[in-house]
Image (cartoon, rainbow, N blue to C red; front, side):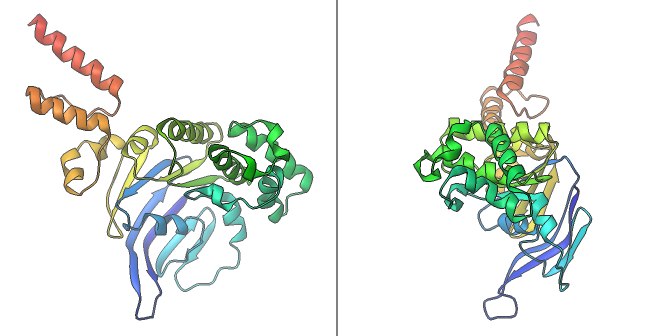
Length: 289
């Protein structure tokens, strides 16, 4: 499912004394199967863009195309239920949205709300649990008896049970330790590949953007200021730092290495393995000469 935002503005509390323009003239194309990362400061408009991706918000100006559906400014659209079924959003701390008495009931709630039979919904729940790395035994447990990490995985399973074509991740690893963060991000990447999902990641983590995304969009003050592949975006690290944004730790290390040794490498490297291999090659060449 392709998604496209075309010259989208959004105003909170429009036509009131408290009107605030959150995003302005935002145009982003997300072809089916893309893994897109959206980065920017707090307040840059990331979450506002996110809520346009399944029509939780309607643009104040411009058009959002979600597959065959169009959401236009000033135009009422009553056919949004299929959109919300096919675009699943994992918000920050999704475990806070758990509410049913058992894990199974929580996972099947969404599919059944969209007309899926109880039998099929339960089959989906079993499969979704497997995808998030949890044992079927917990289906009969209360979600509130689980650990924080397990609760988060149950909440994610509830989104996966909807069988979305697009999954939107809003800081999905917030509050997790480094190991938990990597496990969750690797899980989403595996799902992205296995199910050929379009994946949109809203994140403050430059490491995650560099490691997983095909494309990166930078938002500043509600506007798109830069788009490109991770290699293109992080090839100008000084520019990003001047914007007040971070860069991946490996890029910081490369900049420091180049500054202290006077050796300039041919490009910016995004993984420590690639960087160490290149540095070894350069040093070896220098020794031989």
